Length: 169
Image 1 (cartoon, rainbow, N blue to C red):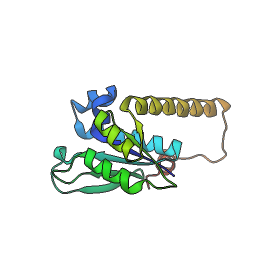
Image 2: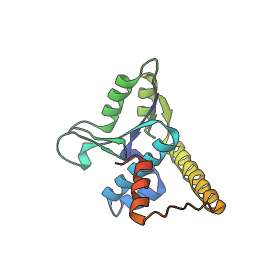
Image 3: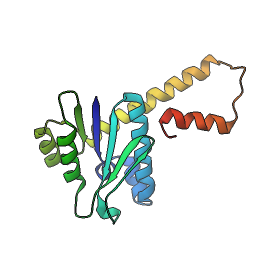
Image 4: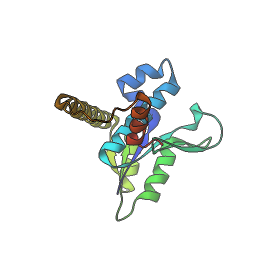
């Protein structure tokens, strides 16, 4: 099994499209990152956990799943780096390969010392963009083949199928 731990605000601060969105609507930037990570998870089969610092969302620690992506908002006075280090230590075993996506150099080295593999925000952005392009090409190829079903789907049913494909039930 492979697991990707993502420093959420680090990605938002580094990816150009998320950075622009963040300046107007931080919540929308978080949502878009989670959507992109859902596509990444669906395409790669990796388990993805996105960690956000609590200082942007005050209160107690919160965990939830969105599109089968695990999203964690840390406890107050706990940084995303601290939580990612704990998770890397807890999740790493002989059968599990843990990757940590952050551009924080110190965090990369700490988690590397714990046995995790490093992935910069830029590297992850390149991977996500390549996956999006592959998916678009595949959809375009299918459309060009003009496969017609005798079963016509309403927009509502097509939307339900799309949610299932992404893992959001």
